Amino acid sequence: MVAIARERVEPTQDDDVPAEVRAFRAEYRAKEIGPRYRGWLHFAFTTFGSLSVIAFAATRVHGASLAEWATVPLAFLFANLAEYLAHKGPMHRPLAGMKILFRRHTRQHHHFFTHDAMAYASSRDFKMVLFPPFVVFFFLGVIAAPTALLLGALVSPNVGWLFVVTGMGYFLTYEWLHFAYHLDPSSAVGGHPLLRRLRALHRTHHDKRLMGKWNFNITFPICDLLFGTWYAPPSTGRGATARSVEGARRGGPPRP
Image (cartoon, rainbow, N blue to C red; front, side, top):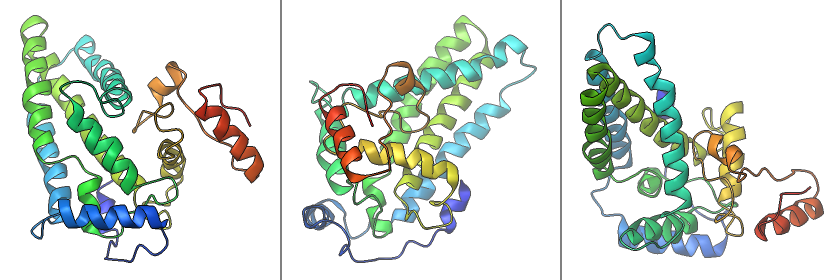
């Protein structure tokens, strides 16, 4: 995924996006993106900050047993569930004490990017894709580190450090994949077959008619499949797609 950094992202016009989205983007850029913001610096901080934590934690693991290595798949599944619940919950529901998440995600991100306008226009738009830099510190200091300390005390130090490696690795995977979904789909990275399949699920989620009911996993749709919220609309025929979307909007089972 480091190849993402080689993608050409130059300022472009929003002429090919719907007028409503174009107007929202212009207003958001004017109000929320300061003149000193540098998108590639933001991307680099998220990437190398996370990789530094992962590398440090990995060097703390010594002589781990097979049972301790089981921390990796278990932590991965836990992270997938946490991603799902956070996205389905406070990011799409204005819950008390967490309305800032609802505002940034539903009110801003889902209006800046819609299912028919998924790609960003320039690196300045990265601010609407990547988590703010302080989230890296929040994730590490409030979630990963305390949980790792608890696991280290209750189970073993190796389990604690492996949890940090997996948790930060999952966070970075989330950021990289989400970033790639909003690349130009004709680009080298954006056109990768696996990313095309995952982007199709995320694009469906960006349909305002469906965003509150389907495809809450950003990375891998494990919990969406487990909890019945996975949805991939058919790609053949406008009428069939329209009927399928209408059925999904009503909350019923997706139908072709």
